[in-house]
Image (cartoon, rainbow over all chains, first blue to last red):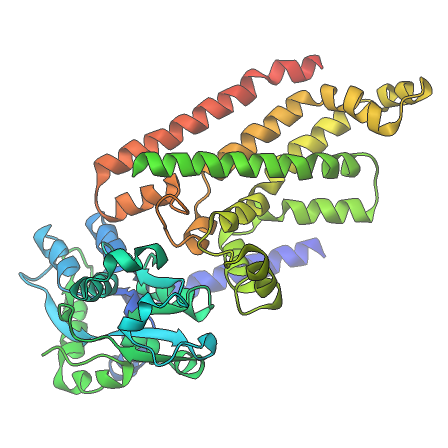
Length: 252
Length: 220
């Protein structure tokens, strides 16, 4: 019995290993792309046969990992500044980051939270005790949220209510689980079927700097040609025209 | 900011240690006082956090005890706020996460005491409670000390549960390990180095206490 279990266990490990052996592009993608990348990767693999292995994190976490030698082929950030850091460190195979989409910041709440109509001015209401925002230094959507709050001079008033998430995905999770009543998240996360079913969102007024999401090809990539091909595919007019259904606007 | 995180971490570790000792000493005594499936099962459950990823605890505390469940709503009714993003939430997470580090040395310590001492005490007319406080507990002192130090250190070093449950609020849920994570993310390696060295110093000092006491256990 024990030996059979051992064989099964080793077999499982070997099967996992053989799955990993298939050649693929390693993409580090900002957390707002979590609902976007699986569909794009499927489409890209269908068209070109190249598989995409995607890791998600805050733009800052991913940039730090790449600056410290993470074996990535492409980095898709949620703004200009983090891919630019990679360029500045001379680790990108291009002289300036490539814009691939424009992000939109939204306020999100659960339908059963009793908060309606949802608006940024309502955040001072004592009924709202917890507002989830991504870290303003690590996550572009967090920075955008604070920019909007600052533009309305609400930071001091809201500060005691704010809980900070590591990235925009965790921010959404805080509100999705009801632990925070409201969250500043990306339109991409708010647009998923699950989030639409259980919640409502309101676009934040455009009082935050434009979220120009940029990507770079990593110089140390062992697959530079394929990496550039993917970034060109992503910025091609045809792919760009499909982005709106994921909650992203075309780059320009 | 650093001193705030340090103070918070110490408060969290101390609170967790006190609560966990109060719970673990009677539990460990019960476990070590006999055999049977109930005891084995309890011990297995209490050892789970040792092998489970902290994300499992973080997940269940955040969602299972969040406002969407009955238990979560009961907690909000009692505390006035959800467990998440609060010091109380971190304490609950830490108590669960560090439980094996209290139970294991205590059970081993109690089991190492020969039954003849307790039997002799009972022959002389001591009640089980009295013989526990006058005989068993003093003899198990090194085990209690190990439990205290290990729980304290393990809570200082906790990361995953706090990251999932905390919301990174300075002075409330931003512990040293979280602030180290932030400093690395920001590329602020000088500050990260200070925080990391502080955490290492804690660990070395604490473990030195445990190992310096070891000959005493053999003596006892």
